[in-house]
Image 1 (tube, rainbow, N blue to C red):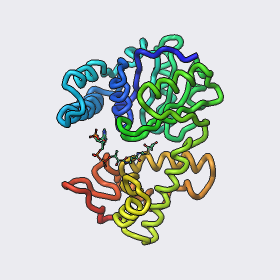
Image 2: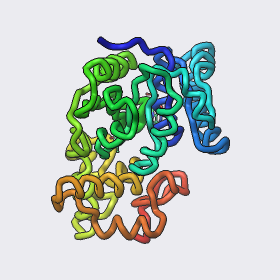
Image 3: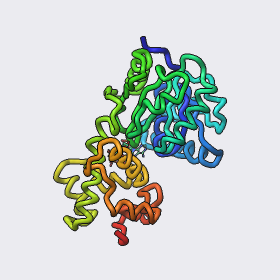
Image 4: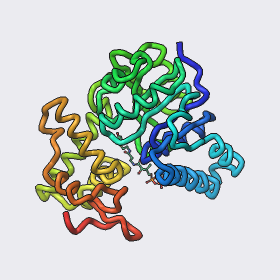
Length: 295
Ligand code: 3HC
């Protein structure tokens, strides 16, 4: 039987965490969002406030509704404030050691019966479940960027997940107006298993001179009706995140299609992480993105 969720904790207010926080508060839940320090927290909250203000400007929301959403979000740098949450969603860096350390902190403070969910893109859910004292209450809830807009949430059942925890997570995602698709605990789940090799192949096509970054992107937009070309998408996801995901998938499956292309390795060495760092396959410093001349 699914549990009733009223208060949700989100750990991390970055690219995914701030979006998950916003969409959760918009669905009527109280949200406690935790970050490592005040400056990072304010950055995440600032992004949410900007989105809410834009929705009011566009006439998609009333000021009263936007204020209500903001009032339901409480930011903190203290793990202790997650104590009253019925569900805690992890959305920190895609690094297993960091996630395990985080869960130990949360597990020590969360109330009995709380459900834990990881937003990992690729790491095995069970590895995180096993570090807690409640592996049966642990599932995956994988959102897509931007979480406020993308319809899908993959709901991951790992070998230790109870039916109650799984149903709670499934119904929670549905209550946010999302399409909740159940999937097994296999690296990359459904979407990244297909999407990651596609983005890596686009990088290889660029390396082989099949087309320029813009030509590859425009071709996929016009020829396959994708909203973004694969290299723009890679910049949007974050090249560091893409690198971490493909490493995990390569370790798991040992298949060339998940291997990091040499070009990606060099870009990461240069600190080119995509849109978040202002430069990746494109340079985002001007009005419109231009191809990175260093590629
Ligand atoms: N945050 C919040 N809202 C956003 C947003 C953001 N970052 N970006 C766009 N939006 C909203 C806009 O406000 C607008 O809302 P409105 O219709 O209510 O006015 C709506 O989305 C459409 O935005 P725009 O008109 O500005 O732009 P587009 O129509 O080009 O859409 C897009 C932007 C939704 C990002 C679209 O380009 C798209 O769907 N791109 C593909 C995204 C994708 O594939 N994501 C999955 C990545 S993989 C992943 O996340 C998995 C992970 O594990 C790696």
